[in-house]
Length: 182
Image (cartoon, rainbow, N blue to C red; front, side):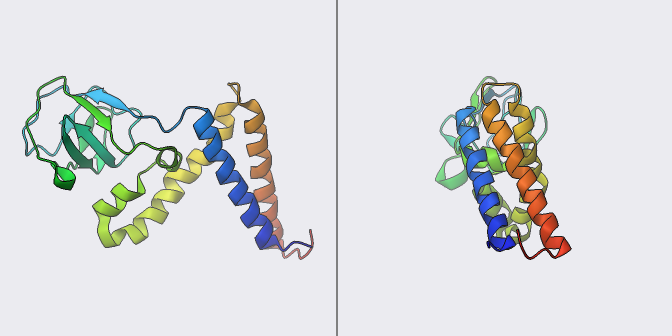
């Protein structure tokens, strides 16, 4: 007999591994790009762009040779910007300057946030914010992922992910009712 905790750990590991694989197969984790819609000076903390779609809620971006850390975004702006990040020089940039991600990866895309950017931004408070972001950004994204795949060629993965979700729910329910055998 397999203890419920081991079954749950295995199901979660399988689910996250398959979710990451599906993200790769579906083309996730690519670089996002946009352009400035307003000129910026070297000390501006808000960048106006065409669209922030495809960018994480907090991450690093690059403008020319300048790396910038942002802590928030709206549909058309990056906010809370730390310009000239990681030894780059903050510079003025004209309208139309390309803005793109520098740390896009399947893991960041699957999580819905960049752990490194969060730790850099929050410092010691990241001990609290990273788990919180995991539960309010990552979990909903991972739970809805299979249902978004029912439209494409990856339907078999969607079915497997839904079955694993059901197994996880049943395992958790069994642990709550005190079942000792599976």
